[in-house]
Length: 236
Picture (cartoon, rainbow, N blue to C red):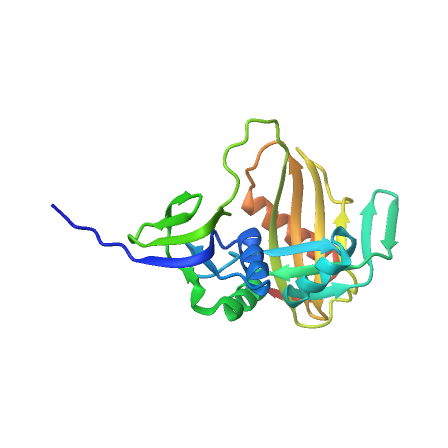
């Protein structure tokens, strides 16, 4: 027989899952005075992502508390379709997973537990595969949506961050350039200029299935970069 001893850590709120939703929830609750424990299976919060939004997507008060996470803000944005290019006077903002990790871990300190997997979530506790149980007044499961039995469409994309040897000349985000070849889905390219020499370029499709051909997307980004006449660059 084996005796398994588990450690019980007390907290008022425990959040399982340190992606965007879980990390922001934990950070906001902690900033409001709650004792929060955040548990994430990976070694870093947020994965490897860039999340962007229109400033008008959230109320001014929410935008204010999101400010520590925002790595770039642009006053305008551009869209392009066949025969129509428009610049919109609407602020656009971006958050990166690196910034998410840094801000949340600085705030929660040792109450962020990374590299540990969740075995179960109950209404007032989260069990971990290492035998630890985190008890709380409330447990929140933010590990992502499970199977949904409704018809869905998918936004699939692959992004590459390019570091150019000279200024690329892109001054504002291109949130949708749909002038690219269309095949099998509604496709467009998305461009964020994070600095005069650095760009995030995404090949994006609105598709019926979640799969993505990574090799095809990389080739599409290379063709797009060449067509724009951007300077020589490396993928970072």
